[in-house]
Length: 92
Image 1 (spheres, helix red, strand yellow):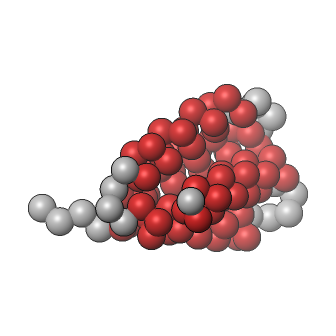
Image 2 (cartoon, rainbow, N blue to C red):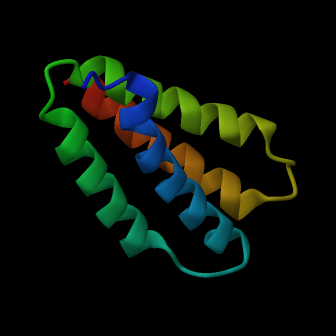
């Protein structure tokens, strides 16, 4: 079976979006976000097309942050933090 970029990235993207929703409600998700990002970077970073996968992950997070209303500051902050981490790792 052939894996697609969407199929590989989407579960990781949704995990971070769920954390962003919790952050928007006032929950401190910093440790959970770090754990989710570490797992994502580890899983996607070990694949042969890691750079493309991490770039797609970061693009998805940035798109979600851009589409969010400005009033959802916690939500946007979590998404942007995750996108920055993914971009930094994709460059390595």
